[in-house]
Length: 398
Image (cartoon, rainbow, N blue to C red; front, top):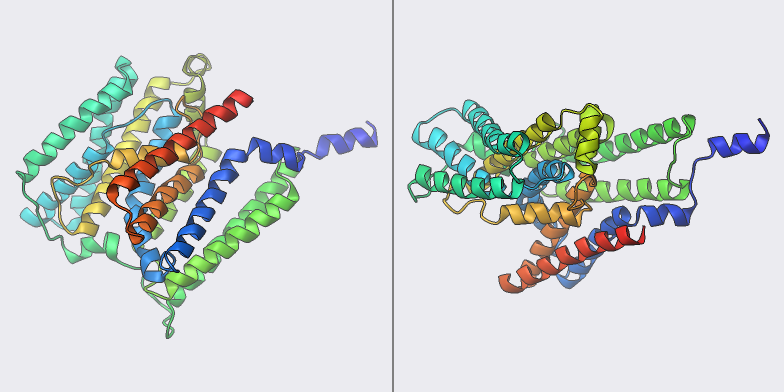
């Protein structure tokens, strides 16, 4: 083998132009999020990134991000779930009945709610997976059924307040084991440690790609991406640390993002879900149990919707009949804005998270600027349409 052939076999780094062209959606949405944050930071005279507002931004969008992780898998598998908002409302109502009316401890009550959420997802997944009823119809029915059950359980009334321990799920902050005047030192150290660990993992992954002659991003992009990521995370962590520190719900959210990123990129079941959404018949012929996989994606969605319902109820400190209304629209929009394909088989966890925060920052920024709810809906709808059009346009070009 000649030296030129050896170099060609080991150097799998594409040109900058070809790499950016193939990853335009991924990096485009991240740059869009940064641009939107800079725009509203300027327009609100620095209010957007004030520690208090930044904390509220995380609390307001945590349940949307959590549900977006489950919705992403459902969409990647080639389906949709319109019932998640009603699941949020019903689970919140169930939690209120158990904890407030029956005085049950919040830990077993939380476990029961998560199991009920899994059951609600399973009830819908069964019809979609094993009877081939379109998920749009099944989950539309589920949306109506679960909303009706929520109204019946609450008897049209709000129930609260929740125990203080349960409220900390959404409104609490991690303890500061290293107190220092003016800053939450534990949160600051975590904010530094997290990007350091991510950079080390990225370097390790890149070295493995080089060893196995796998395509990798250009070195310049790799370095810039990791430097910017580290700077942004440390800066945002510093802002949060100057207030009350990292919220408990942020830790839950980060743990779930890490888990689902690992599942979708490093596990067999993750690869099978993408295969299912890409071509169900081919996936079935290759030996994948497509029915069971579809069923499990809906069970997973039910659990995450239940968790979001608990977080939302803890944040409101009460269960209301209207809880969760239109949540499904924000969750689905977050996935599509983040790069998921309506035809299935395409989508990334990081993209769904970015999409959720695009919607969240827009909601928060427009509210600070005094934009009416009517125009907020118009603008969010146009952003969603533009994101889907961009996806379709890129597919036609390729």
